[in-house]
Length: 403
Image 1 (cartoon, rainbow, N blue to C red):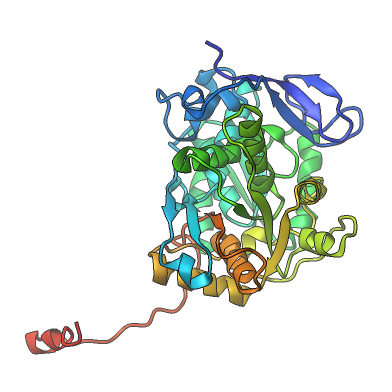
Image 2 (image 1 turned 180 degrees about the vertical axis):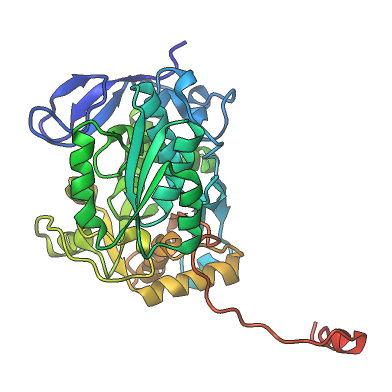
């Protein structure tokens, strides 16, 4: 049995096809590359292989040809949680939360770290690298450590302390940088092009982002249908593009009859795609202002920025930007109403959905799912508010008087 249906690569710009090998951009025009699979008519039941766990149940549509190269910690198969209290509050018929905080390092990044490190092993690379504001570095360092591949991790000096401590334990070499992500990534990309390390970044590696494609497969499997709207946070655009690919593949294989409306969600402090979409103008990188949602603080997503914009325009999508205040509100409502604690970056999609509902941008009879990309347990905490108590029985008993 063929382990993977992957056949080769094709340029999304000029359409040139290439044999299956490690390429980061089209040798002909420099465009983004997409992996091509032998997609045949199949049901989700036919596609799934329960001999594997998590996202690797969908190995036929992932780019690893030999299972011996898979590096996994059980990522994927994250819960799709209904939100019966939050949905009516914000004004939508049905809301589902794809909670990625249950992944091994508490973030959606584990899906792509698994495919990145597995691909590095597949192509015989000895080292892997990434520039990160937190989650990506923690995740890639962990999977590289698991896969016994040398990792050079660059982390923003204002990254969350918990994540930086995790990185320092897992990375072969942790490099802390000052300045902006957009400045450093150009130098790191040049080193990758010189063959010094496998590309663990999100801007162009077609092998890496395929792991996040399995989000779409898991949602369709859980619901046996496709929600009306898909709200995705967008920094470089990896989740958005990969999940779009997943829904597109399922539609081509006859597994679903339609795609959800794709919604790009960004911070007001870093919104190059939203600005271009709403103005109708071509994509232009923008400067980034400080935001609590550090994971989406990217003003120049590289070639994937125009790709996200293209998908939005071709499929009548939506693009929304949210403020830090809206992000904090979403974080609070998620905890209060559904009992989920997520980090600021993790709730950008939910904040955008709340905004869309308030502005009547989507029909109240619609269904939607939001990706909650991270647990809140690795982010900075808000101040704790509690009641100081005495330990006597009388004082403790008095505390239950209002129950």
